[in-house]
Amino acid sequence: MPFSPFPSSPPAAPPLPDGGARLDAVEVTRGTRVVFSGLNLTLGERRIGLVGDNGSGKSTLLRLLNGLILPDAGTVEVVGLDTRRHRRVLPAHVGFVFQNVDHQIIFPTVREEMAFGPLEQGQSKVAARATAERLLAEHGCAGWGERAVDELSEGQKQLVCILAALAAGPRVLLLDEPFSALDLPTRLALSERLAGLDQQVLMASHDLGLLAGFDRVVWLHAGAVAADGAPGEVLPLYEAHARARVARARLERGGGVSTARHVQGANLPGPRSR
Ligand SMILES: Nc1ncnc2c1ncn2[C@@H]1O[C@H](COP(=O)(O)OP(=O)(O)OP(=O)(O)O)[C@@H](O)[C@H]1O
Image (tube, rainbow, N blue to C red):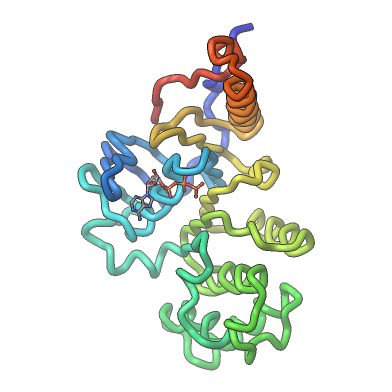
């Protein structure tokens, strides 16, 4: 059977009641590089994974969804809010966990970092502190409140960032490689927690196993949708592409450039979005 990068059926999960997110004809240039050119996507499922090679546009897509980046053309709508017109109120609805924890952490202590979101949501100081302490305790970090964030390990900082995003109770949670520094027990515990959340979760990850139970996976390649569907369909396609890329590089190193095009899946399809 010929290699086809497109899954045969659309994802089965029901759409979110409050609308999810929609990108229409989105154009984004970062620096001198065109990242998206006419991207259309409707993101309604509860758990959506994003995969793709380095530089394919995953972080840019997530940043578009929380209004950190505005489209040069086209529109982005999240939970019914146009990110250009409602940029200021978006953080109250859309939580974000950055790839680099240093881009996220702004307070000196764990408690302050964790309580910021609940305070912004209108909780009293006492209630915000209680929310922070409860989440920390639930994740085996009771007593961390007084700790200086600077003195935490990278993985511990990452955990605080994720818990801080959860503490704010957003309607949509965007996670950019959130588990890269976490130990296995913490990863498993947080995966379980994410699976049980009511909110919509969009997560970019190079750890394909983390996305296996999701409702839908979108594979981005060079700023376009290369495949989109159920994890059981999209993840093997992406993995085949990765293996083909490695095989092609091996052949090229060995001087066999002309045979590289015979490697299954080495040639990507044209862009596709929905
Ligand atoms: N601050 C920036 N200035 C200029 N170009 C940028 C900037 N950030 C990203 N880019 C470019 O935008 C493109 C998409 O980058 P993006 O960070 O969205 O990719 P990614 O899929 O998240 O990659 P990774 O898997 O490495 O995190 C890349 O070509 C990158 O070089």
